[in-house]
Image (tube, rainbow, N blue to C red; front, side):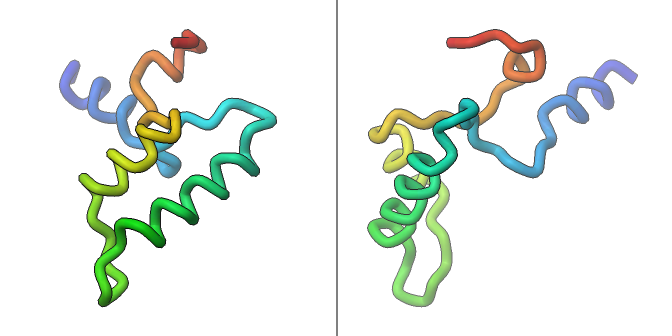
Length: 71
């Protein structure tokens, strides 16, 4: 039961932590990173995408985001 609950907390439709008011900046960064890291056939390379977004100051959501903790 505990495994189910912890797994449900990490599942989210928007995996990136985007603070309110910074949605436009996030969209711009995501667009640029897709242009830089996607394969020629359009497939996404997650590791390269994550690294690109990280260099621009974005991070994936963690369980602590649901608690309202800011890092």
